[in-house]
Each structure stands twice: as structure tokens, then as C-alpha cells.
Length: 171
Image (cartoon, rainbow, N blue to C red):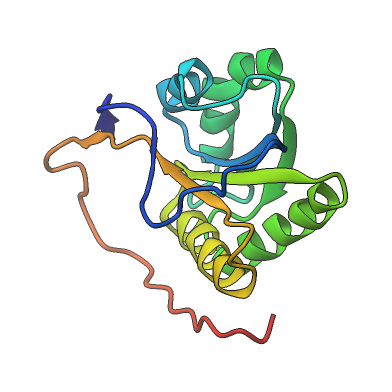
């Protein structure tokens, strides 16, 4: 699907606020294990920070969740990340799950950073969450990170289901 890129960095303007808080990270996972490994080896992260991963179940196709688990298992285990199940094709459920994790972290005063390296719908839910929360609480910016991978040419073969979502602030 992609080759390694330039490494993980924050996406302006979604830089976290300078703070003495501990860092917390939420990552959506696909089945390219080097992306999670790259995150764990990055100089941009606090290895002592809280880590949560969003695993897409159900996946787009039957059995793909097994690919994601097999590819990422040893990295998840070594990182002591919490695993959360969220449908791979639903940005709204992704948003709601991140909000639930965020509420638990906020009580403990963590600086939240999101890394959308999983499915596109999960990435949309993560980006929507960052935009809404940063507009609502500008003093406590949530960081948005990306690993800037290089997409492999001609990796898409067909268009199947088309999903439409309406993003509003009623959640």
C-alpha cells in the first residue's frame, strides 16, 4: 500500500500546546506494521506516554482485521498500548471512541496527540475530532501527527462502496 516516508511529524496548525503534561497518543491501525514501528521509534513521541490503538473491526473485507492484528501484534504488545475496537469504515464511531478515551485522559491531565495511520474513514473521524476540539478549547490544542509515507503507484484497483457522511457539531 505504501513505502516508508520521511518520518513522523506534527501537521501545522495542529501542534500541541507547550505543556508539562504527560503525552497520550491515539493511533488508528492498518496492516502495514512498519508504520506503528516507525511511530514507536520516532523522536517525536514520549515513550512513557499513554498509548491507545484503534483496531478496525469489522474491517472493509472479511479477514482483513486478522491481517492488521498479525502485522501489529508484537508492536502493540511491546508498547503496552490499550486496544479499542472501532469499525474500519465509520468515522462517526471513531470520533465517539476518541471522545471517550479523551474524557478519561482529560481527568488525568494528558496532552493528547492523534496519529491517523489506519483506514481513511478512521482518519476522517480523527481529523474531525481534532478540528472540533481545537476550535472549542484553543488553549489546549490536540496534536495531529502523520508519518508522511510514500504511496505505491497504481495501488488502487477498483471502486466499490461509496460512503457519505455528514459532519456536524451535534455529537
